[in-house]
Image 1 (cartoon, rainbow, N blue to C red):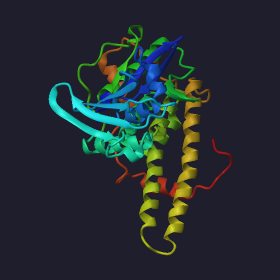
Image 2 (image 1 turned 30 degrees about the vertical axis):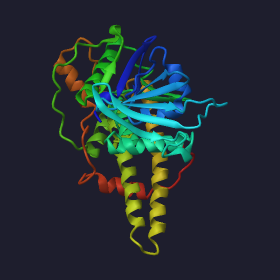
Image 3 (image 1 turned 60 degrees about the vertical axis):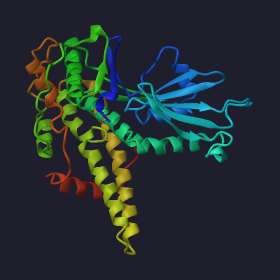
Image 4 (image 1 turned 180 degrees about the vertical axis):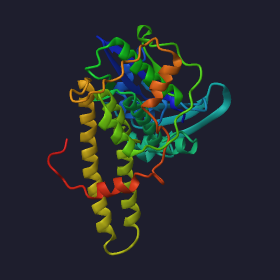
Length: 373
């Protein structure tokens, strides 16, 4: 599954630059959004696997069409008969390709007389049958698709954006205190560079365009982050911007250093649980307990990082002044340097990491210390 199936849409709402990460389905299709929401119990699970879904109406009822990566299509239609509610008596799922008239197969059939007729109109059984065929065809799993979206959010995090989570809505925005237009444009350019380097799609209004697109991707810095160097950067920082950049590598969702530590604890618990000794389940449960509490503290630090980003001000006790913001018309070289400065570890693993022992020891010693956010 390629990253370009995930799109980041940028917008400018009264001077606030926002970014929303969308999966591979096209948001807000004219005339189709209401239908897809109405039949979300079918379209959403398919879209979570990276499939582009549309809802059309046939002779008597609706038909869901899902385009597969190989160019073929799944057509999901209810059994053509009268039924009093929204649950049809059965389903028929077929696969075809408009460019290959010889390709036609029945993927799932729970209509009367079909091989899955005992499942009748059950949507969970319908999705299970469709998922089994999609697995055989090599379509990305929901976990793989979710990982791509999480990586896009991680890149926005590294570019200086702040996550906003609301009821049925989530997005990223630039810090509230970042009022300078040139600095906002520079931050947007840095986000675009990071997304472009990893192959993600993006879109934004014409008046928000920061600079001309860079023709080629710049080489990345060597993988690996030195926690002592992060500490030194924070100790010497003269502006909240610099501390936010330093913390971003630790608090990035999914692949940040702290989230990777939690992943190691969870993997260790799973491994330990299978050893077979009498005390092993206890140790595994304890590791999961520690991991859960560390996760709560990581979320709290991530929220503090967002609050600090919104402050966006120099530190009154530091003599060194913060560097001036990069102008939106800066050269490609300066913009590339700014983009890469916030993400020195875009590709890395924990194996052999010099900070692993210290982080693991700190995580193992964690105890609840008050309310968690």
